[in-house]
Length: 233
Image 1 (spheres, rainbow, N blue to C red):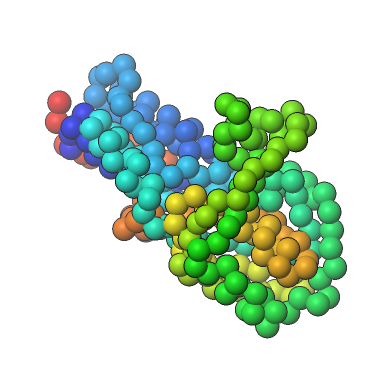
Image 2: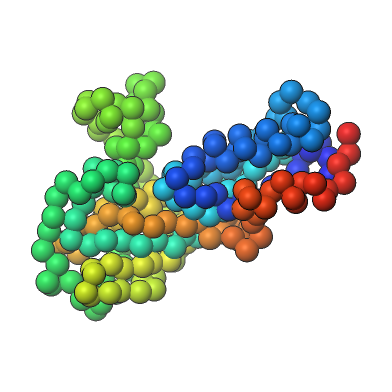
C-alpha cells in the first residue's frame, strides 16, 4: 500500500468518539509506521460522536476525493424515542419536553413515514456544525445565544419502519438519503408529524457509497491490520 499516493481506509467509528478523533487515532499510527511527522489524511462524511458506523478515511492524494465521496448515497439505521424531545434531538442533552403518545400506533407511523420521501425541506439542528456569521451553530447554542437556521433542500430515497414497541414507545427506521441529511433533525420532524415528539437514542451509518459496515475495521482491529500491510515508501 502506498499511503502517500493515496489509500482509503474504512473504519466503523465507535460510540462517543468524534470523527476527527477516529481520524487522529489512525493518522498517528500511520505516521509512525511510515516514519513521517504527519501523514496527510482526511475523512468523508462527518458522524456525530453519538453515532457509529461507516467512516471513510483518505490518505495522501486520495484526500482530493473527499468532496465527491460526500455526495455519495448514505444508509442509516436509527432508533427514536417517542413522547419526548431534547434540545439536540439526541441523547447529548436531557429531555426538555414530554408529549402524549396514546394515539401513536404502528399504522399511524407507517402512514406518516412516506411523507418524508423524495425532496424535502429540513432545518438543520441548532447543535450542528452549520456556520452562522462565521461561528458554528453549536457554539452559539452552547453559549445560550439564539440560533436561526434556514431550511435546506435534501433528498430521502428510502425510509421504512423496521421495529415499533408500543410499550416503550421506541421505533426503529432504515433511511437511505443524500448529502446534508441530519437524521437527528429527521427524528425531530417525524416526532412533530406524529404529534408525539421524538429524539434519537441510537444511530448507525451502515453504508456510504459502495462501502458497507461489513467492510469496515474497528479501531481495535486497525493496528493489527496495519502490521500486516506491505507498505511502499
